Length: 373
Image (cartoon, rainbow, N blue to C red; front, side, top):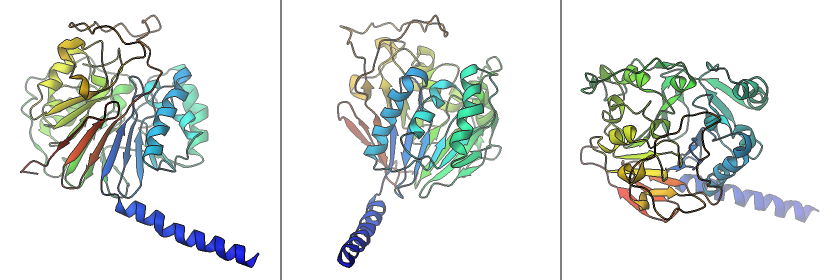
């Protein structure tokens, strides 16, 4: 018995330095953009081993599918828990997989913008019953603009939350925004989209912007008359590439080198938004989680930059973009994609360089630091 105890203690002692060494030798910020079929789920893994997940994909019958896809990324990253979960807003394609995911892996902190402003049965039931059961076992934080989320190795700042935006520019930002003069406001957005938690994440000289589904009027509030964000290296395209977000005051002013579109087969990637993205100053490449019928060949990117297609491959993709169907229960179902899903992975260095990899075909491209960065 004594000998068994000594052997056990020796094994435990030897295992500890191995785990510490693994966490210390990681040098990159790794970002997984998970295909949740036109929802959102983006996983950030710091070199410290600490993790931040933004959104959990769709609910209902799709919850198990999307949670499984998120778990695949979590396992690839070698994580045993999610340290921080941001739910950008209370739409089902952003929080729907949360309960399913929480049943599969511990989540230590739940972060959101606060109360739902757009009553709906599914969201209200979730917020009244399921959500408190989840965060009562962990930590619950309601963030406001300017707050920092403590992730070791990263600087994570909240740019927008609950319909408000930061009032003070980030360091090095604050110059007049030339795109404000031509801005045309849309109707006031009283939905949850305008409440989105938007985040700016910095790792050394590498900068990422993820604004959830924040809509154009709030983009104007954030970016005008002065650009409070400055420039970024990577832009996770807002609202799946829909034109009620992605105004020039944001997309053109941030001068992102790379944009990644978390769209679905028939959700997002519409021509009005794609024109703004493709014409953004400084943009080197646009990557897409899905090919989009709403882009057609006219506005889509080459296939090597697209991570996912559909289960039944069409013989050809039309040149013209398909008009977006009206949302609602009568909308036709998009082509199914329930088979293998592929992520887009970004690995960033502190010097500002980063590599983007398409999980479907293995194609990757490295973006070296600009001389001025």
